[in-house]
Length: 224
Image 1 (tube, one colour):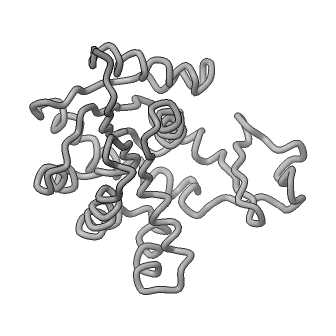
Image 2 (image 1 turned 90 degrees about the vertical axis):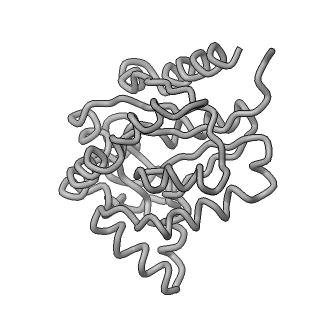
């Protein structure tokens, strides 16, 4: 019988392509992508105590504390559009956050881990640029602007986000190995959860669609 509900967690280091795959999965299965990274970045644009607190962690490449992340995720998952499924992108990032899902009665069907080497991650992340005018994203190797370092739409010089600088990127990858990588064993041992390890290098060899097809195949085979 074909599955109609998908409660998914996307795991992977920064730059592994979680955001891209979450969007593709969201469109295909018609369930919301819940990107805590996007939620946190939106908070930094607001003149509030929470926004300033979040910004302080992000510009240093540090993880936002568990209690704050858990509160944000729990509030979002309680909304009506999550009733028949969701895609968690960027949460959980620690064992404490993962356990909070169980403690709050939030079940997970499948965990997808995008496996990409550190060298590839560094190349992907430090090559990213953003337009400060329209927020359009570019990559100097994979999706460059027509004119070097200039936005195609605005004609404004592109910038590197603070959290995409090489020093911060290396720190973010290190934090992933230290704090988030243990989630792989956690979810593998968790009863009722299907774990899928996907080769994230396929995105460089072909396109993100190659990775998406592999994820879909694994999900639908496991759920049949």
